[in-house]
Image (cartoon, rainbow, N blue to C red; front, side, top):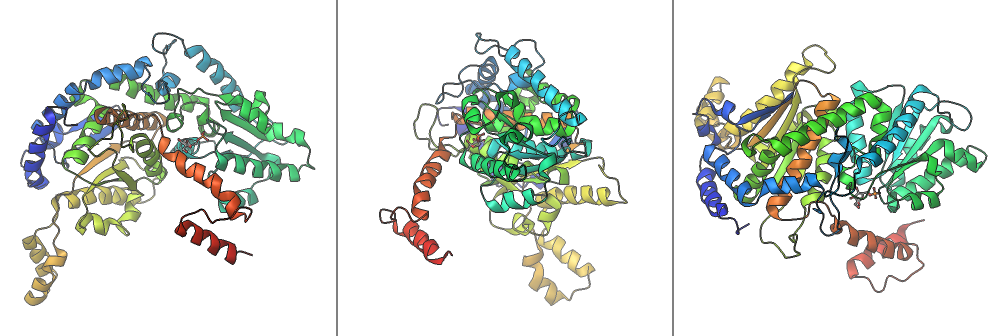
Amino acid sequence: MDKFKTTEALRTKAEQMKSQHIRELFEDENRFTEFSRQFEGLLFDFSKSKVDAEVLDLLESLAGEAKLQQGIADLFAGKEVNNTENRPALHMALRSAEPSYRIDGGEDVKPLILAEEQKFAKFVNNVRSGKWKGHTGKPIKTIVNIGIGGSDLGPKMVCQALKPNSNQQLRMRFISSIDANHVFPILTVCDPETTLFIVESKTFGTEETLTNANTCRGWLLSSMSNDASAVAKHFVAVTTNIEKARAFGIDPRNMFGFWDWVGGRYSVWSAIGLPIALSLGMEQFKEFQAGAAAMDSHFKTAPIKKNLPALLGLLGVWNQNFLEYKTHAILPYDEYLRWFPDYLQQLEMESNGKSVNKGGQPIDYKTCPILWGGQGNNGQHAFYQLLHQGTRYVFHEFFAPVEATNPMGDHHLKLLANCLAQSEALMKGRTAEEAREAMKAEGLSDSEIERLVPFRSFAGDKPSHTFLYKELTPRLLGSLIALYEHKTFTQGWIWDINSFDQWGVELGKQMCKRLQPILSGDVSADNLDASTKGLINYTLENRD
Ligand code: F6P
């Protein structure tokens, strides 16, 4: 990043701001107005982070130097932004309402998308209406999605987030891990006659998914007198690899396609969203896509300081590369967003966890931070101690709905109070003097007060972003996901890395294949390192 002239100025500014407590920044009464933005029903407050007008100016200059606007134009125009796989990244085409969408001025992909969507919509309506019958003539009651990574996290997160909007007649289940402890308990509560399996895999080559799909097919057939024709009524596939899905035994009429220019972690808008459409119906699925499309046009056209995804990405670069916060906590105060931290983990860490630039040169600056998190209110009684008083520099991101989805007494008011209190406490902290006052009010003796002051003081100065939204509608969730997709792109662009490949997942997969015959006892462990060999020998000696 040293190639950008603004980098030096940002470094100097960061050194100055590191020693300035965020509390002091609030002497400016307009701070909230100046450092918050709205997009449709979404409020983004970044005033409780270490920014001021000069930081925003510098980040705007950085974006200018990096030609971010050109990057955005290239992305939307279908240029080959995924340079190691020679592909564009065109997930935006899936949700665009435009009648045509061309890859780099060439092929129009919209007719392909629309044809697939029609097939998809017909299937969704048939299943939801009960017209689609299982092998024994019963309508479908349970959908089991079999997929992993982008073929699991997107549909699972969205189905959970929009559960209140769903057709409760269809039970949604998700199998991802190769661990039989994931598959077994789900199959035990499913009725084969009324269960439909969706095998989702972009490549149709993922071992976890194929193993799980085989197990589920065996389970189905064992309850259908091994009548292979039952598979067509209980298995459909979503893939870009029709040949492999056909070889697996899925009838092409039961396949829904998408294309190699849709990355796995960006595929929720394609037929990979089938579980969502089954759960919500096509109308709401289209609203979900429309919310994302609205964020797309905003990203394409808004000036940097008003552009939510660009701003979120640039602020992330500021926090990570200049203020040096080490990890990024995703803290939803919304039970329905339970899977959102996991979803963002894949989106950002698989996209931007890279250490060579687009030209293949090693880079000497930090790229994606570690994202982690969980439901905020539970976290308060578990890991927040470290956030408030630990020695790690964490950046916090809070999410909460203004309205209660299930109004019950004062639950929602208390939930919101908890969320807002946490960001306030993290930011302000409590000085020794304030701690003394509080303890005096509790009636503690002077000596006890002095003994406890170091433990009951809080340095504060812990930054956060807060997102508030009236309610989590399909449209709003679509916008929120697209916001993070484009944040991820913005950061990848500034860091000069390819956000759309994931070579880092390959080595472990290959080694896993090599270890399987050794773990079966068919091949000797002698050529392995001492640790792996020791672990395998322990396994072989201790299993029944
Ligand atoms: O191994 C990582 C990965 O390739 C992800 O990028 C992807 O979302 C996931 O595995 C599943 O891949 P597929 O949809 O091809 O089964």
